[in-house]
Length: 79
Image 1 (cartoon, helix red, strand yellow):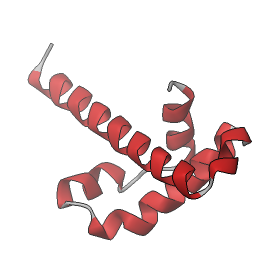
Image 2 (cartoon, rainbow, N blue to C red; image 1 turned 135 degrees about the vertical axis):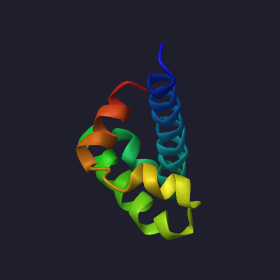
Image 3 (cartoon, one colour; image 1 turned 180 degrees about the vertical axis):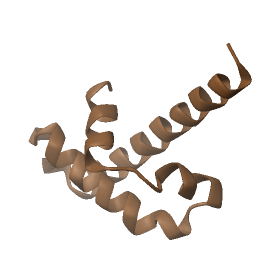
């Protein structure tokens, strides 16, 4: 594996971990989302990430700069 590929995998893992952290925060605030579709949960997680992005470290902000609801949905679907 090349260093560039290793770095990409590390970034993907970090993004996945952070998204799951936000998933747990969203679920604490709204437990009824447990019964919602992945698309609806992804919208809520995406919204929370966007609301908190300015409080994230710069390197994490860069990870989420181009994040879409669909990206969150795909990551959550593999959970």
